[in-house]
Image 1 (cartoon, one colour):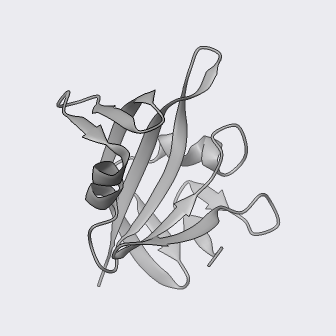
Image 2 (image 1 turned 60 degrees about the vertical axis):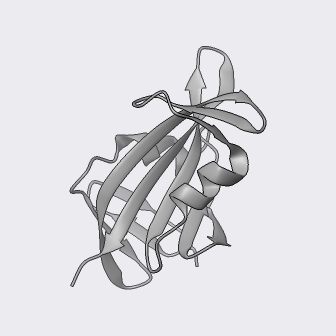
Length: 123
């Protein structure tokens, strides 16, 4: 599951590959924000193309959450408060989607928040 290629972002299996994760309906790829490729996840924008295991996906949603505690999160756009289980159900809720996940760094805190980049399969 470590075959990920992105336009303007190449994640090679020779480097620190993202760890595959299957949660709920979507496939997740989780990588540390301090290492390649996770350090590049925040460069992705809506509309960017990703190739994952020979299929093309389009980035459709990017969400950022502050990690108030290990199990309490705040959506940085809507200010909605979510428990960890509700957040992960919300992010990994669509069959066939891929979700790139990494931490958000703020200052010296490498785990200040969470970044989720969601992409849907393109025809």
